[in-house]
Image (cartoon, rainbow over all chains, first blue to last red; front, side, top):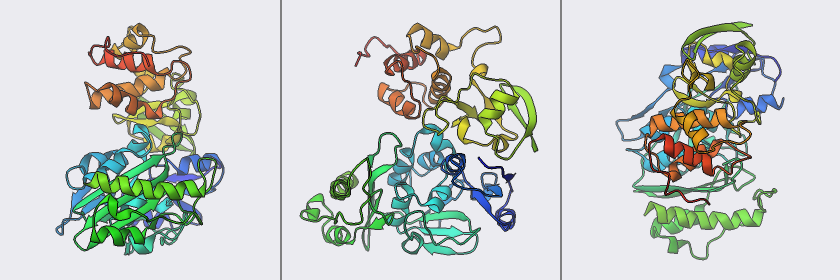
Length: 263
Length: 161
């Protein structure tokens, strides 16, 4: 790693101020950023840790029933504390990485990084979540803007994520066994006003909604409603783990499994 | 350089670190607690697992500065003061849960974290919990057996795979 300064503020306001320095970068749980720094793929002047900010920790329920998760909440805490109110989300969090990674990695870090194979983007987009930052609220549909790209401005911090709770939901991940990232992961959520289907791991443009499947499932929420539907292999990630055509096929398979699991 | 202070295996420890100093470097190089191993250095293998405030973490993927003020337990904190092995360590010995031993510190620390969360895990739960710990010798079977035995469960029923 290149040398950098380290700061650990205790409030969002102090963190925002610390991030104004040139080339300062926010540090969540570090489960992606630290390996990136070790590879010398980034050279921040300063890391501003968000893990000491108590107002960004924990899971709670809003008056409108939405599950609200502090941006610095580790995956293991989401897995434990969201299990009652939003079981599909807790299940997803319980299968990110491995137990030690889940004790450090945070939801805000995952969403700010927007890895094309990360799990949380599928939950946020599939739930129509609201990404709350120190400056504004961003709808998930506007937040994800392509591989490793989000609507966040320089120095903007994900302070909270609000998930409307669906009637039924499930996440199915076809795991890349070495990294435990999603080769393809599909989050299906049925709300009173329709079904959302979000796919991670597959596309070169990052997480996306499969609108044909959403339309079919909104009129008939069963795996059979997906018969004959497929996503094109064009624009799917092709690498040593699987071709674009293989990933496109998996999208349909994992969507069916998610619908079956949601029941 | 920043000064960090933490409790390591029940004793106060402090030292000067750079922003980029990893927790595992601080433990091994400053405190000379070399039981915590660096295997892959990419947070895949789990040889560096220690407990920070009671939670298993990969010490190669956490900055030392992040552990300022924390309670840290390493493999050196597992055995008794007289060197007697704890239940998990003894079970690893009894059930041949190690061969070269390189992964063992991380395995024992992960096992301890599992048993504190879930005192009677099923074999499947043990295998799932060890997803982030890689062993290149044993094929895991005897590690799983050792952890089941350490939890006080009958291991006679676990068939070799």
